[in-house]
Image (cartoon, rainbow, N blue to C red; front, side):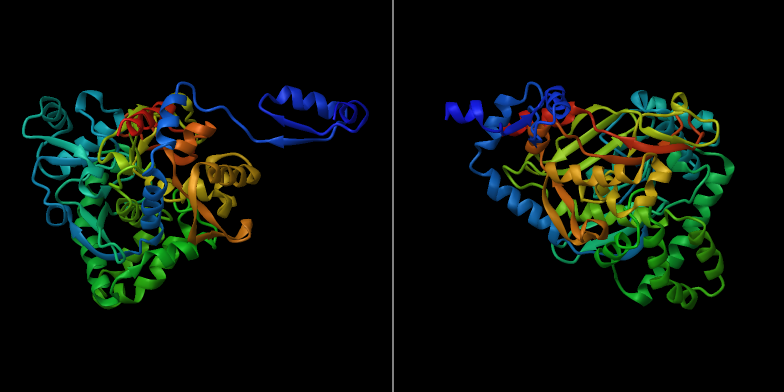
Length: 461
């Protein structure tokens, strides 16, 4: 063996530090590269305990199986006071629980707007005073109430909610209606035009959609999302195909249900390619919730941001949040805006990545790079890297450009710790000053602390 090494052609395997591999390349030495990374710092002991847990393999198979088999159906549109039992003065918001004192500009602006919309304050100044004092005000996370909301994600009693049921496992999830573009509540705007639009949505849009659904019956969202992926959407920041498919399904019923209002409703939806986002978020939420509360499972069932913190929840750890500081996305900015204008990451829309869409499906949507930055190859790389930290490939959500391979789905805390690879998230960027609106879009990574904390908790469970 010694002689063959001295006189034969060397066979080299490279792993780790790239500088050594580059030196071999410069000398034209053939080599095979192994994509090995050290575990996240400080996780070795906890990782060993979790990997040795006899429950883990079966628990993860159960949890991810529930996620993959969920059949989300859009079944209704109802006011939050009826759907969620929301009382006056109670507001739900995106991300982990947060107080007014720690809330970012967009979150504060959205709460002020919700106060004005509900008639709980005559002016923004009075709304801020009441929110700061906590006088008759209750704040809680949307995720605690089977709900998700984009960006600030604020939900108040008079807002109309999309209702999605899981025909396989029986769960229900909710999301507010999408407001459209420009200055909107979800980005922290609360001017008169924002309140007027919310009132129109409550008086016209919600009731018309509900009446149309009564005629069409439940809308199969799993099938719609699967088709939209093959038409160039990734279902987080690109929803053009999904919105069009939904309108195609519902337009005749909208006209039949409300001929006098149909034109303004369809015109509103037509002017907003992101209209389906909120529908898709509720579909993702009901699927992820089906995978919750499996003892021993290391499956991530929620990723969410409140503009201050980024938090995750894990199937085997109940409703506990594991958090770290929310980062500022890296991407493209609108007009004269730049990174100094950006708020840290915000919103529940990362429920799409949690269920194998959004950043995890960017290879299906090469045009997304024109919105979030980068090259088409970056979109493909983003998706392929996510297979390294997920448990499965989705049987229905497939990517044509990868030979109809299923999207990577089922983030495993242990795989994140073992590889050091963090989930890819593509997102809109909110202005840090309340009322600014959207200032750009880009990519962001969750904080490592959230995953290491969850891993330690799993090792003790």
